[in-house]
Image 1 (tube, rainbow, N blue to C red):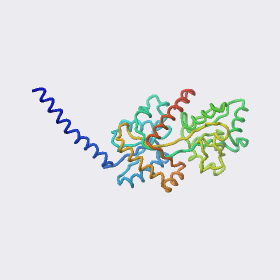
Image 2 (image 1 turned 135 degrees about the vertical axis):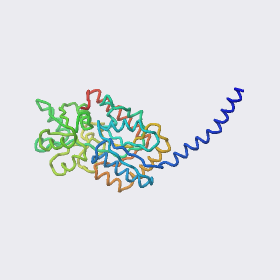
Image 3 (image 1 turned 45 degrees about the horizontal axis):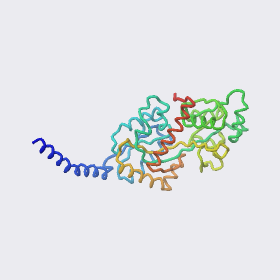
Image 4 (image 1 turned 90 degrees about the vertical axis):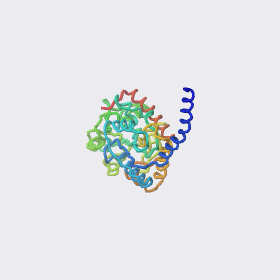
Length: 329
């Protein structure tokens, strides 16, 4: 009797399996059947927020479903990322990863997530170039990386530079340059890019490693001089400014970037659907122009390519953070 009951249950389970599988497939095929949330882990108005809103609008149009962009700032984006990591893995909650959020687990003991293990990469969206600027009145002789290094080495006390904060990407990028080029400067952290740029223009600090989107108007106005960009290639917004690698620091590469993540376990079919839509959106000249106006460069990578980029950046910047004993304030 027990054998018969066991066998019967097994037969029923096998018969029901295609029904459950069909139901799961139908749910994926029907995605999205309701509003999608796109969480921005930074305040409104910055490049990550602007890129998210451009993408959210375009996704809404293509998916025929509302994509709600919601700001949840705090702790370099780690608060929002930790919440999304714990969200249902159904494709209805996404987060716009930015480099500070990618690296936050190295900088905050209680970040609450593992960037590599807790998410499903969907697609990269943009690159955000960074630029070294100097106050031209304070440092008229510093016009490139060679003269910057020479000036720094000639000082009796360490030359000051600033960034948007301790552990910011500008901070890490300058520390990488110092390490690769073999010279010293003293970091003076600010709480945000705006006050740091204001004081660089005002002369309180002579040098800054800044987001290009924030520094560009002041470069164009002649209040700041751009001496190098951190990306491997020159940027269209500053075509005459050489890269750091071009100026003799071979292999130097520092680019802040952003891309979509979903909670780990999100169905592959849903991830591929979103990635495909993003690829087409970023190929549109209008989207590229709007992102460029926000200081970002449209840049698509597939889920697999984004996963590799996350792993690479998480590893190499994490090593620098440990070597330099860097921590967020």
